[in-house]
Image 1 (cartoon, rainbow, N blue to C red):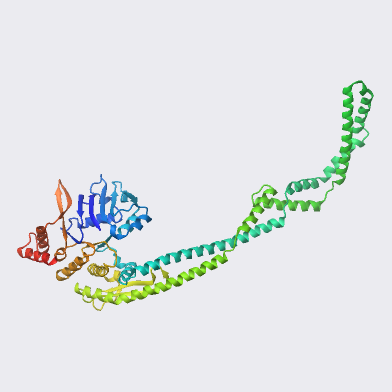
Image 2 (cartoon, helix red, strand yellow; image 1 turned 90 degrees about the vertical axis):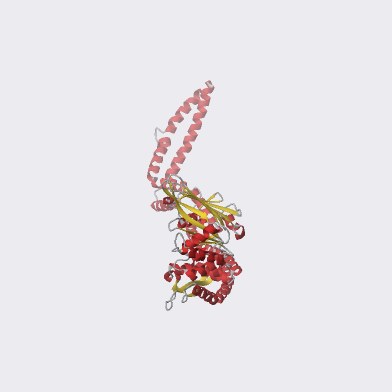
Amino acid sequence: MIKSLQIRNYAIIEELEIDFSKGLTIITGETGAGKSILLGALGLVMGKRADIKSLYNLEDKCVVEGFFEIERYGLQPFFEENDLDYDGRLVIRREITPAGKSRAFVNDTPVTLDVLQALSSTLVDLHQQFDNLDIHHVSFQLRLLDALADNKRLLADYQGRYQSYQEARRRLAELIRRNDSAAKELDFLNFQLEEFQAAALKAGEQEELEEELGRLSNAEDIKRTLAAAFQQLSESEVSVMGQVGEINQALGQVRKFDHRIEKLYERLGAIMEEMKDMAQEFEAIGEEAEYDPERIMEVQQRLDMVYRLQKKHQAGTVEELLAIQASLQKQLDAIGDLSNEIAALQQDVQGREEALAALAEDLGVRRHAVVAGFENKVEQTLAELGMEHARLKAEFTRLEELGPTGLDEVNFLFAANLGSRLQPIKDVASGGELSRLTLVVKSLVASAIPLPTLIFDEIDTGVSGDVALKMGNILRKLSNEHQVVSITHSPQIASKGNVHYFVYKRVKEGRTYTEVRNLAPEERVTAIATMLSQSPPSESAIKNAKELLEAGH
């Protein structure tokens, strides 16, 4: 429950603090005094969007703090999930800077508005005239029926299983995706490997092929050049070998006179032997050299294949290509078939789905069982509130697939007047009708749905007298189990409060301020009497106010 609300520099509020107690808190005041401003400030605590226009003083920041007691509401998991420090006493703070920057804090820890909205929605149910109310939403309508059907444990079991079921379906979809992807990858790897295997590459062959192509392409030049070398070295009349032989013969005659000449003679003899071997090789290589266009084409085609593979795989050598081939083979060996795993998971998903379907049927049966009683009770209570011909019907639609809450979707249909066609609430209910309907519905399920704090803004719109008195009785009854705050213009409703705040304007130094005062018993009599008649109130209005207050307690 909310303990207090502190507001600084918001709208026409300079600084204000309002405390809330258990039971029913009534807020009344002059038109335009700032009652709606209090709700606007509370809306900031609940995560609504901030606006720099809300600042009272544009040179100072706006701060709104809400203080709550939350020990009884089982919110520890929420705090753990969002990495927040848990304490039975909760402080929510919103700040708006003059630059328009908004910040939110939960127990002094910065949070996003999404987190703040999720948290505050479990603490405060704010019913405002013309707001987008919970009663409009089919999800909330289904929650109401589940609460009446006492489906809490069954629904928790279903939703836990549903979450596991969804996770299993996601795993199955991922396995199927991976298996399809693996099949495509397998085809691609096989295609690449087949290309390598057809190439039958060998280490070092590129260099050999390039040399052979050069030799074959230049066979005539090689033959001519080596023949000339052989001729000049050993066969011509003035061959190199002949001249060297004459020198060596001359050295032989004087070598015995100087050991250095002996060494030169030996070296020249070795050179002559080397030249003889070279001449033979010139002759042999020259005879082998032969232009072969067919072989040239074979070698060129082989090299073209090597160059193409190198370009395709961004490799520089045959050795790099062989390494890529080995890697592809390794990848191929690593790819496994997931068919067996997929089949097992499909069977698991089917089993989970069948179990969920059975739970969903149980939920549906229990929901349908409470509908008639709920519809009748709503219509009876609305009749007491001046809507004798109002009708409410819970229309069920069966979903084609299992959803987070089963196989049911429910939509409340409403007709306020005799002969009117039943239509969705949002399409037919006026503001006053919707206020009464929401009050009635929430009062019927208040003990079943955890709504710690209920705030009703002008729920008395369009009603007065005995109807307003009965609405006040409903609010008072609600306040036995929940903290209820009602902003009202109705003296009948105001008389039912445990605490009564009066909102008024005060002018100081040329500016208007909103103030709030907790009314003493005598002040309450005057305030309610004024609501009944005029200011100052008449004696009969004061007497009537006292009677209302005595009856209210």
